[in-house]
Amino acid sequence: MIGTKKYVPPFEAREKMKRYCSVQERSYKAVREKLYDFGLRTEEVENILVDLITENYLSEQRFAEAYASGRFRIKGWGKRKIEQGLKQLDISGMCISNAIDQLDDEEYNESLAQWIEKRERSEIGLPVFEKRGKIARFLINKGFESELVWDKVKRQIN
Image (cartoon, rainbow, N blue to C red; front, side, top):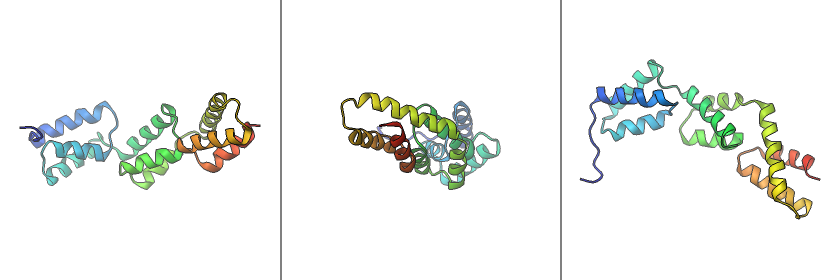
């Protein structure tokens, strides 16, 4: 039977989720979906989530901070894109703003400057205004704030 979910008893599901959450930080949404995939009812899912939270296996704030840090340092995302990603995972606004505030401003500005340098080298032979526009659009798409991007691009590219 293709597409049928295999039922996992609540006790076993709880233990599986403890292991799942021990490996790396997880969002409530991901854990909830996985529990529903086990064929559990809403009441059982909510009870397991409460247990995971009280036993500190699951924390929305820890997840948001790990997500923001990883997306910034590994993928080079800006604050706006990180914020959108967290919103899609149903993270609360307070946790999102706290996670974004944890990003080091100096490191953030340095990263933006490095992206500008890197992109400038690949846009050889273009007029200055066209080069600035292409680089700014790229950085805004990466989630950096448009005012900050335009300010830095105008200063760095002559």
